[in-house]
Length: 485
Image 1 (tube, rainbow, N blue to C red):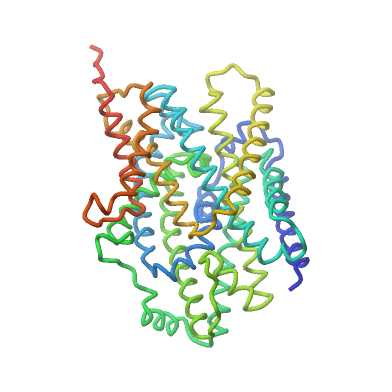
Image 2 (cartoon, rainbow, N blue to C red):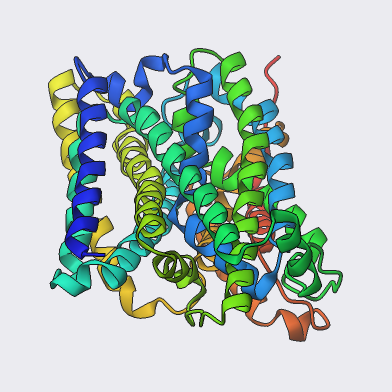
């Protein structure tokens, strides 16, 4: 298929996003940008969050991950449900009680401004890296399979994508994103289901026959029983729970969407229904991985060396229809994460670093600062995508969880201490040093784990170790709170 036709379809999709932006950003204010005026229907938020939480990396990496790790990723997915329940009944009540715009304002109220800025700093670093890599994967695939053929440079395609995000989020912010996420979730899921149907038709087998064949070849193995393995099932479940608590419950991007709901009751409905949907959708992606492996086995189709490219390569090989469907799903998956990230980064910087709530700024000045911050983060986003290209060698989903393990760990420790240790107050000045030292120690433990712990290899649970080290550090440098008589 002509790359020009694919490019036209991509541009048409962007035009649809801009139309939604136009409709949702009328009479938009700073409150609209940051909180959506707290009027978002909970079921719309829940549905849209599916795409936002999965992103282009899940869309590309999880099906390819089946090749090397079978269904063992499902243990992480089971852990997700535990994490979502904890968010619904522990974190959301706290955020609504304090009426927060940025969730890191809680750290200021509980510990002090140094802790607030430390929490927001780790979120900014993690989200910038994580979301930029998600967008990188979308740009990489489209460039390799479509735009390279017509002479479009990688950097130009990346810039084009980021400019379009700016166009449709610049005014409406989180309110616009709530509605664009629903569109993007729909296209991403349709792309996955339709591709599975086409693969079954191409192989001329039923769904159950495919799963039976995959089981015989070992692809449906869910539980790794070797406790030393990275994929040991108990580690996967525990890691999934804490990954969810950290990367959703302590993440401004995901929580900002929840906090646009009208009340705590509706936000909780959103989170619980979302937790069920996310398990079903992840199973769908694992099944897609099985379909891709079975197709390769039956037809002799040579799979790419990079697992992240398997879905793209097979879709292109199947024909024009599946290729178009894949492209639309990929763009939808990539944008569902990237647009919300820029908005949440802007929110965090304005409320936690610049501390809008403590400054006597009028609306005009707030708007000016917000727009400049939005543009600055978009520029940094672009730089990360360009710089990362030579280093793309491993599965990105694994890389993203590795990054999260080191950057969300301090947030996990800070919020855990604040919530569960009520009678002690950490030294606010020591918090930044503790938060920086904990990931360094975690990294060293990870490198030498096999020598230190009898062959044990850390996986995603390094996040828990990191959070625990932060917690211990806070406890060490804390004093008992004296009760007022």
